[in-house]
Length: 402
Picture 1 (cartoon, rainbow, N blue to C red):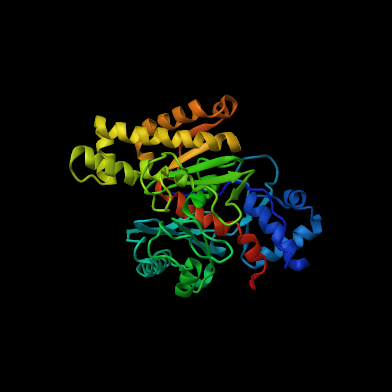
Picture 2 (cartoon, rainbow, N blue to C red; picture 1 turned 120 degrees about the vertical axis):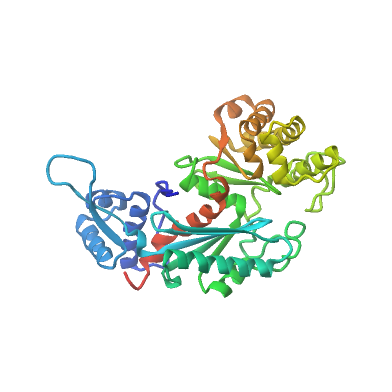
């Protein structure tokens, strides 16, 4: 798998940069957004003069952060010299901690995945062991790719819980039972000695699909994750949206049943109690009088079992009815579906569409496309990497090498 980052608009330089660093940032950001640019194109995209572009570009090439190459397209005359970020100049690590797994990936600056590891883990109940496992997996992917940790510019981390951006703590009560008071970024930083940035997994799933997957170049899109929890990631006007304190997108804790089950969040009748993959598996276990886990439930769906298809389809329809509210509020162009239940394919997508079409207003329902994500179970870990890569121009602009 060799994902290529989508082109993204240039951002304003961080205020702490000096004049020279600001010019480097502008060039690096333009090359991140438009790899394979000429010096003339860089001048147009950055607003810098042609002599300044040449001086900065030459400096970055000398530092090994930018590489020159010829246009591969056949043309008459002398081919222009193109500039791109040097893929091996720096690397980014992604960590994804789900409720029952830890996965880690390593990418270069071009977004090429160099190594990937995934292990089952009891993340909910054993944070210490989960952080230790994540550390070991990071060391493993670095060793496999032959990359030393001093060449890693940062670690992005996806966690199956909302993250308080002010304190850095996870909102763990009822979601991650043994995580109260835990600061995930600090824990990983202490183990790796690298800067770590943490976000909710659905938010990073949305970012992953937006940068690397089916949501490339779509400015207004949603990513709904249908797993043990039901999460919603939002990309609005081309930017990830997490809300004031990182809680935006907790779709699974929307009230749907007046006298429903008590949810792990403490409320009653949340969508998650009836439509998460775990809830549907429990329903099947009762109806069949046998133990059915999520993997077995999906096997039954694939085999065409009528009861399993009915249970999963009903759950997806309920999710679609709640998504109809979101469609009315944000009028997205695209909804991508990931997580366990996405394995149900068109049956799940059709049920989601039916719920949206019935309860969203017609113009909003007609303008949104609902389809499966392109990244399968790597959306969150690639979103974590995209979080770091998006900051790479600012990081590299201040690097000593430059």
